Image 1: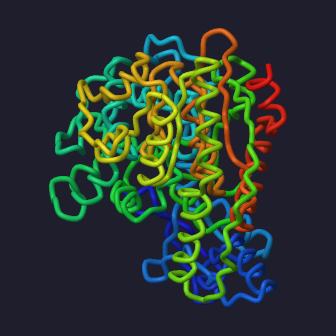
Image 2: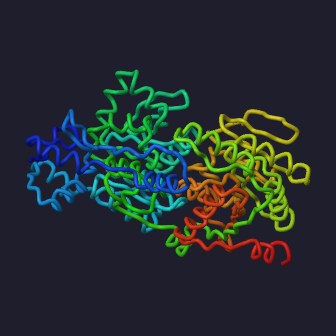
Image 3: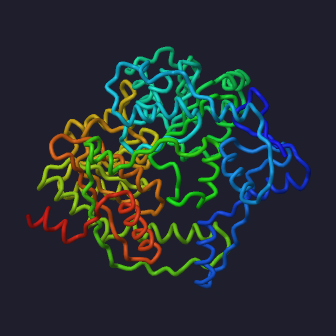
Length: 511
């Protein structure tokens, strides 16, 4: 059996061998989602009907190829099975080749030591994931890599605001000839920043775009935990000749256990392993991000009287959970009233500029009206430039120089509270230390959304360099309580201390 490449492709590794050897490769790259298995077991134990998870194979049997990032795990498995193989010299050269670009040739920017370390790892390894905790300056790392290599590059982002933020940052860092794809623009430069969703549509329909993307030497994917989505995947696969393939994220994997989920295995295949990492605790200790003081406020009654989902069809499960979420989160009277009173205390008694994050537009509208009744000036920025203010009024956000006027008005103190939809939950760069308190009202359980939402408030603050974070421990339904427990565990695993209602009252109400 032999592993080889087909230049100029760099994303795939091909396999030649007899049928038995090919079968060994195929079985070694076949996995069952461990998270789905756990969920299935819990459902069976609870007497629920659920379809068992199916195995997923990351080997293209027709083309007899695998993703380059999967090669190390495959070779490890073959070694364990004592199966002999040969590796083509070109693959060995790809694995061992080092770049002659020095970090001394970088921009005249006051880099932090860990940013230089991340850039150096990208230049040397060429493929891999750089894990820098949220608010650690991943765009600066991307700029350093792009400027150092100075070959045709593509920087992928998740949404329109981040597209313009990245362009502005690159220009500030001295990168010229920048192209933009997204928000109605299709301009290709030596260094191009693209909204992955826009670019994925063009890849399917535009021959010029497909030709251009095959000539990209440097591919950097921001928030690379999204890369397994179909739209992102089509772009990354089209850039299969890129010599450098780097993923950036504070939360690249949805599980803390390696290989726990199918999506994490897919991400590893596209980029390779983590080649550089710095966590939130280190950034806090060095003063580069704010230290969150997290308080989880218990919510108990009224209970949500809906039982477990007893259906093998995910559609029915989703409908049932949506009803539980609406009753237990979006329109839960005690939860919303308690949140509003806490926000009132943070704003009126302690003068803290407060950001509130919700998952649904109806929830944001509900909180805006409740705060208005309490005399708190608030605004709700939803997606698609929609802005809601009290009394059901809605207008379109004004954008100047790619920046939201509503966000600027909040930063200038015109609003005491800004409520944000999921558009604020990932990557959105809020200016400076404008957020002094963060109230998380969306619930949920996933590692990635939990830490991404928290990251919206971790920009460094003057003075104490602290941000107050309010979350809720929901006991009004066992599903919601399980999610709250998982959020609490994720905070602790990330190195954050979690306090309760008593500590909040002592500090902010009684003190």
